[in-house]
Image (tube, one colour):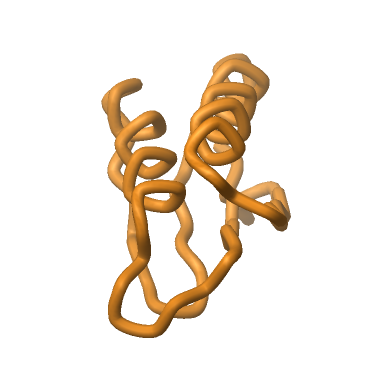
Amino acid sequence: MLTVEFTIEPFVEGDPGVHVTAAVAAVEAHGIAVDFGPFGSLFSVDQALLPTVIADLLRVAYGNGATFVNISVSQDKQ
Protein backbone atom coordinates (compact mmCIF):
# COMPACT_ATOMS: atom_id res chain seq x y z
CA MET A 1 0.00 0.00 0.00
CA LEU A 2 0.98 3.58 -0.59
CA THR A 3 0.23 6.61 1.57
CA VAL A 4 -0.75 9.79 -0.25
CA GLU A 5 -0.58 13.15 1.50
CA PHE A 6 -2.03 16.18 -0.25
CA THR A 7 -2.88 19.84 0.15
CA ILE A 8 -5.06 21.93 -2.12
CA GLU A 9 -4.97 25.72 -2.39
CA PRO A 10 -6.30 28.32 -2.09
CA PHE A 11 -6.47 27.73 1.64
CA VAL A 12 -9.23 29.48 3.55
CA GLU A 13 -9.26 28.73 7.27
CA GLY A 14 -12.52 27.13 8.38
CA ASP A 15 -13.91 26.93 4.83
CA PRO A 16 -12.19 24.36 2.64
CA GLY A 17 -14.23 25.25 -0.45
CA VAL A 18 -15.57 23.06 -3.21
CA HIS A 19 -12.11 22.73 -4.80
CA VAL A 20 -11.12 20.76 -1.69
CA THR A 21 -14.36 18.99 -0.74
CA ALA A 22 -15.03 17.80 -4.29
CA ALA A 23 -11.48 16.46 -4.61
CA VAL A 24 -11.85 14.55 -1.34
CA ALA A 25 -15.18 13.18 -2.59
CA ALA A 26 -13.48 12.07 -5.83
CA VAL A 27 -11.01 9.99 -3.81
CA GLU A 28 -13.76 8.63 -1.57
CA ALA A 29 -15.75 7.59 -4.67
CA HIS A 30 -13.10 4.88 -5.12
CA GLY A 31 -14.02 3.43 -1.71
CA ILE A 32 -11.00 5.04 -0.06
CA ALA A 33 -11.24 6.75 3.33
CA VAL A 34 -9.59 10.17 3.47
CA ASP A 35 -8.17 11.48 6.75
CA PHE A 36 -9.13 15.13 6.20
CA GLY A 37 -7.12 17.72 8.09
CA PRO A 38 -6.84 21.50 8.16
CA PHE A 39 -3.24 21.55 6.91
CA GLY A 40 -3.24 18.44 4.75
CA SER A 41 -5.09 15.22 4.15
CA LEU A 42 -4.02 11.65 3.57
CA PHE A 43 -5.22 8.29 2.38
CA SER A 44 -3.85 4.82 1.65
CA VAL A 45 -4.21 3.27 -1.78
CA ASP A 46 -3.11 0.17 -3.64
CA GLN A 47 -0.29 0.88 -6.08
CA ALA A 48 -2.35 -0.30 -9.08
CA LEU A 49 -5.13 2.19 -8.32
CA LEU A 50 -2.83 5.15 -7.57
CA PRO A 51 -2.71 6.73 -11.06
CA THR A 52 -6.49 6.70 -11.44
CA VAL A 53 -7.15 8.14 -7.99
CA ILE A 54 -4.52 10.88 -8.36
CA ALA A 55 -5.84 11.80 -11.82
CA ASP A 56 -9.37 12.11 -10.45
CA LEU A 57 -8.20 14.18 -7.47
CA LEU A 58 -6.32 16.61 -9.73
CA ARG A 59 -9.07 16.84 -12.35
CA VAL A 60 -11.75 17.63 -9.79
CA ALA A 61 -9.60 20.00 -7.71
CA TYR A 62 -8.52 22.13 -10.67
CA GLY A 63 -11.97 21.86 -12.23
CA ASN A 64 -13.38 23.49 -9.10
CA GLY A 65 -10.92 26.35 -8.76
CA ALA A 66 -7.76 24.98 -7.16
CA THR A 67 -4.68 27.10 -7.80
CA PHE A 68 -2.07 24.67 -6.42
CA VAL A 69 -2.08 20.99 -5.46
CA ASN A 70 0.78 19.39 -3.56
CA ILE A 71 0.95 15.58 -3.50
CA SER A 72 3.43 13.35 -1.69
CA VAL A 73 3.42 9.56 -2.06
CA SER A 74 5.30 7.16 0.19
CA GLN A 75 5.45 3.41 0.51
CA ASP A 76 3.99 2.03 3.73
CA LYS A 77 6.55 0.30 5.90
CA GLN A 78 6.13 -3.46 5.87
